[in-house]
Image (cartoon, rainbow, N blue to C red; front, top):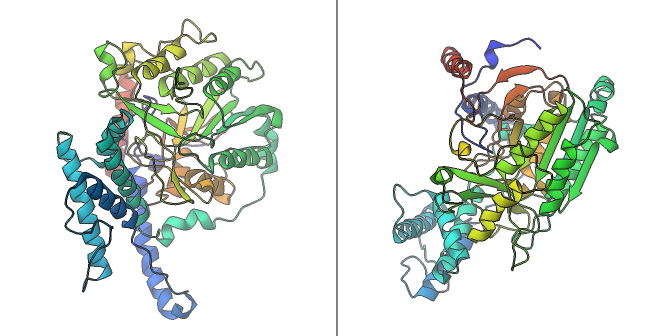
Length: 499
């Protein structure tokens, strides 16, 4: 495919698995411009077809659950709450519903600020950082933190519910009709594709309902739409740590994977994040910069006497690098999880976030690295996950294309027993838009999924899953630096100004 200069993008590099990703601001801006036009058209059409629209049901106050938890906190601690009684009832006589909502939100924001000051955290209030700090303290056994977490966690998720119904322009992907598979793609692509699909639902705490369904949806798409042989697909449900790591190493040692084939690793389940300023990984100060993101096996934290650690982004990236070095195949990673620090409560049976708080036992955190370095199938020549190089810009390893469900500080949601991100990706890929679709094209087709979930991608902007890849745009990685990478960044910047 010929390079199209109009596809240059403005980039801001931030890490997932220390890779860097494209901040697709231009996609959001273009989406907002399209929204203005479509809303104007909708207003015109609504005037002539108002009788066709069903009556709008009143939305319940999204802060009720959080306020109830706040009332319980005040009742237990004996502190005063000016806006509610001990039972959680409120008196808003003469106030409109909008004024009630503003008053509710203000009371909860005051509680957030009081907690921020109580913990002596520096800088302006950061909701995600505060939630993370409270989770760490709660897992250490602080009763006050557990009660505060009850309030903060529900309020954090209420913001998602309070965002309102998505506007019609944001739902375009939901209405895309499915098209018939392309026989030529099935014939030429299918035999060259390989996949590892993992869906984890059955967590002891905060179980999910849609992750296994997501992995099944991926298998159906790959076999039915792209013609991938079932023998090329490994699908695992509710995988423990050993099963997940072993499956990755099995891909590396699969001698049937040839150069220019394409490997897809799709994971749906919980993710977590370990802030290096909170979790002291070892005595090397180099490791205390940034954070470690992780995938969560279903046996994380079990058994209690020797808890199973998560799988760090460093371990995953190194195994993927070994797969590329061994097979010369290209790799696309799809992650329907999030790493925002995680909550412990959900807003209802149909609305769940895919993130868990980190395991706070220092010994377990340390073993997350030790087990990676001492795995019997790891090659001695592979970089150590504890190397100081990870804290610098000198890590020179293969960078796969990575599609992630949301930004670093956002939550990845599932609803109706499916991941919102995976549902959108499947809908687009099975439509006419999905033919010869690039990574940036996919993100443009689904961003934003909701008011607080914006998918992203990192790596080369290639045609998705294409063997013998066609590079549309090569996004510089934060883990490597060269003169040419600097030139590419400058070109992308000036191109965005002209465009």
